[in-house]
Image (cartoon, rainbow, N blue to C red):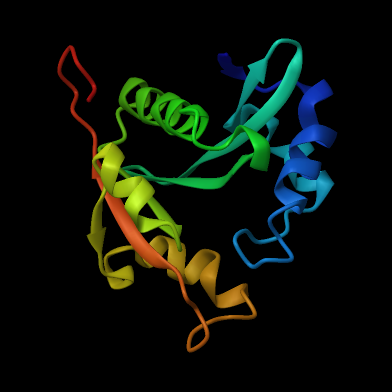
Length: 158
């Protein structure tokens, strides 16, 4: 398995991967045009020549980025692909000098195993006022928890 930066030719596959988790409420829909517009923010995981996972690292502020739209084909889950994709985001955050990376998720255990720590959503005002206020689940129906990772800028980013 290889994790690499996404290319324009991956956009439709990324859109399809995300779409598989929208009806269950695990992910929010992302219009295809938004994926094209932000393709440089995405990483993909390839097994053979097939994209089997994707993730986006969205920079929100000078000291804050979000891991979003993490999606791995159902039959490929449990093989370390999600972890590898998130690790690629954390490495890029370190390269960019971003000290905090967060995720809003219903899969907190997964993020805790990587080193994220649960935090209050109120610690992420850039996210709340930029994205969350436009979500149909905001504020009372939101079932996601916030998890924060503090990036290590030493030789070993983890």
